[in-house]
Length: 516
Image 1: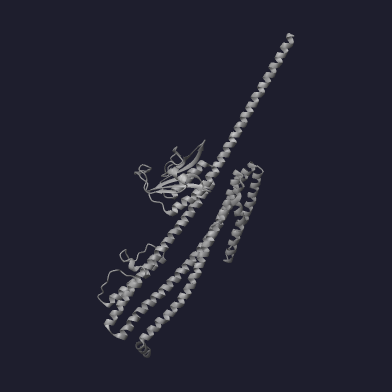
Image 2 (image 1 turned 60 degrees about the horizontal axis):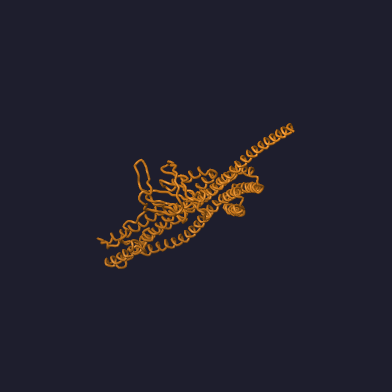
């Protein structure tokens, strides 16, 4: 035992250097292993995200078939069946690809097979509906449409889609946890190596030079590197002794470790202490600057992901509103403006629909919403007049953050306030503007909110086109029935007049005969 202790004392530098070298080799091995783990987990995450996106598209195929058949039943325009035929063509190839990928992962694909069979049955039913339209059997078509078989398929499809999404999210979550664990393990090992290497380096310098000036110079270089590679406070820092310099360097490493830990935990609001606008430039290429940029990038990515999920959820809900109320124009208008106003976090909203009155075209307020109270106001706006009329003609979204004096007010129990932002969005489908939505809020709307409104406008415009067509057909049917009733009444009146004339003629003939 004494020999071992003596050997360690005599060869402490060699032992420490060997230990550090061993740790470096181990670190390299861990880095290689973690690199493979990270790459593997990234592949799993990418595949999971692709699967979520692909399986989410299944409902779009069903929607295209449903809307295409309904539109064809109303218009008898073969072009309306285009999206339905396309979805019918690609659906089974798409779901087969999903089944093969999930089966390769060991996932039970019986639910997807059930969806495929239900969709095939719904396609057969849709073909029959189209046949009835071709035969002008509109009553049969309406009866078949009223069964709404697509709803059962959609519900089952959504159950299976959500199950697959949950499975892929869990798989992605596991990959993320494995990724974070690999990063943390690698970080801990590197920190351990650094903590062990710094005292070793200092000890070697002491053993070799035994000179305070040499140590001071070395620590000064360490501080310079600390500023260059980790963090530079900008101003010179005066140290009373060498220990203070070492503690300052370790403090920066600890801060870097804590900063990385915050980021790995998803805390993208974490701040690097001491980093400000004055020393931001000198820290652009060191660890503090790069970690801060990485935090900002991750924060931006998180914001974009949240915005994407928010937009997708909103589009799903607006499509449900359109689908559930597309046969009632008034209910559809009220539900659409109520949802859009609330979902956008606005305080007021109005839906202005294009109207054709003889040769006059204008925008008419179809529905409005304010503080969860409906206000039914008769309002007509000529095309090209005011912000609404100009937006309709130009077909481009308009957003104002400085409203004209007295344009509108947001009212509440506390009084009135001028909105901080006004957003006017044309509701277009196939480049045809059907309506204009105007919403006002206290806060300025983000770009992703504006993009959502424009995308939602396509759903609304499509539904308004369908509702307009339905109303026109209904009006034509009522006019035809009224004209038929008038013709029957006229025919009956003529018949009675003819009978009276014949009776008069016979009476005259009898009188002439008697007179002769």
